[in-house]
Image (cartoon, rainbow, N blue to C red; front, side, top):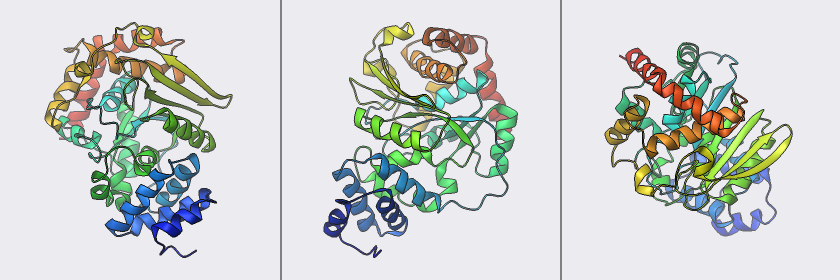
Length: 340
């Protein structure tokens, strides 16, 4: 297939699109000049990214993973990651949730990178928190064994994907890159909690995850305000993907035992240091307001997904007890010391 094609011919080809065509465009995207990369990304958006597009581009991007220094041990890991691109301005909820889940006993290999479509990315806030990133397979193994938690930046393992960052920053909102990025985790992920920015993306991501053969997955989105996580500003839509099939549920803040809150109550800061302070206050137990509550809500959903708790309110209660006991703060301090 000739990949040196203009947008018009690409569109014509995509009238009969499937995963193979998305794979071809994904390969081209990895080596494209910025103008052509922008063209391809906007083309995917123009046709509304589908599950085939996610899977095809993911397969293409995975060909560009750097060689690993050793095999990653087959631990049963969860990744909790949002696509970004929601423009909601919340703090790094999934990063805080990863800390809390690991303190709850869940093995978490958290994928995240520097900001591309938000103010502060997961990688940015982790650096401000003094938390080391696992940028080699041997480090992933060590951190998962020692802490139940490894923070991984896809940019370290997929440098050609990372090179698209400047193009991605030029586009507002979520794109095919946002949808694929959470899936670029070199660890052995069998469970996923993925936050997306719309119900349409939820459906497509759910189908993609079901075809990837994951044991259990949860795709979440805020329904009343664009948010790529379970929210307290309104309703949240949850799609569970398991061997038994796909199931939907809609949860209100009251279902977690909380009240609706204004967006400003769960807003993030303007820089990594401010978001780091927010996460520290949650993990240390100083913050007992809506920011802590939204982390508890997301952690509770993951605990139920993994059959660690029977229902959402029990999940909230257990996650709260882990913070109040000091376990989450102690985990943070141990990880920080390991990076010095």
